[in-house]
Amino acid sequence: MKQYDINPLRKGWKSKRVKAIDVDFIVHTYRDALNVNVARFFRGIDQVYIHECLNTGYRFYYPFHILGDASFYEDLQKFDWYYMPWKWEHQKVKECIEALKKDNLKILEIGCARGDFLSRMQSEGHSTTGLELNRTAAQEAQRKGVRVLPESIEEHAQQHIHTYDVVCSFQVMEHIANIGEVIDASLSVLKPGGRLFISVPNNDSFLSLDMNVLNMPPHHMGLWNARSLQALASFWSLKIENMYFEPLQPYHQAYYKKTMDFHLYGTYAKSLYQKYGILGKIFYRLFRRKFMNEIERQYPTLKNFTVIAEYSKV
Figure (cartoon, rainbow, N blue to C red):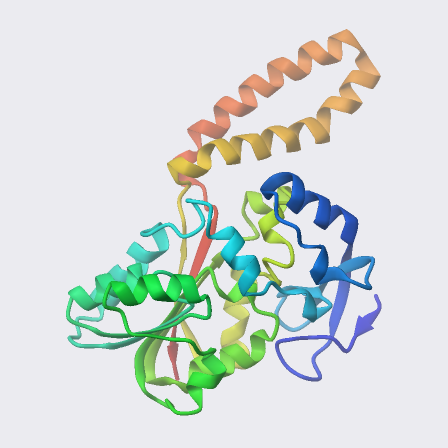
């Protein structure tokens, strides 16, 4: 296994290359799925690589300069589904904060989007600050009365060491190339004993079976799972308090079934058709019907789209 001196978590850590993706595939997929032109992010390169950190199992895209800009995110926020006002992870972190049974906590959200989570926490008596680089989203948050700063967490940390009781991010850390610096900064603004919540797509879920366009650059730069989130506690001043897995939401059910259907077809159908002809087709249809019925039965127990890591700072 060839090792590379490429790792955004810490300088000097090694990684291995696990996959190469043609840039043409990425560009065409964005165009076909979302009518968004991302070719400008990949000038001069033919392939994008997925590397895996040998210390944590965290997977990341390389090269690092291909992440999206403000204009790219303004294109995406035109879709109604992009900034959902209240999601499962918002409710779960709200419940975790309530379980601390402390009043007037100082809460920082990294990438607060339109400010819906912080607005709710303000209404419960907490002091909130949001960081948001998307100007349009930040303006909407400010209209809700949320204090929003157009700063990165690294910039914010320079003047706010040990300031916050809670630092949280929802579907943000997978977008970041320089992830190690962002984790360092997130911890530096947190008080000792404070809570850090990281909510990211769960790449051990059905996402791993689908080349989802939004799980690739320039949208996503990292691929998290429970293992890599847990491993952070071994290398940073963190203690894992809990891991939470999102149940399958009603609005994800059709996507889940479609993904599993394609996976089933690609895994079994072709070989059955070639080997047994018409009998193979009949067998596959019967098997598929039973398989899809079983999928629906398992909905309540599935660990799906999102995973949240709750840490305390030690």
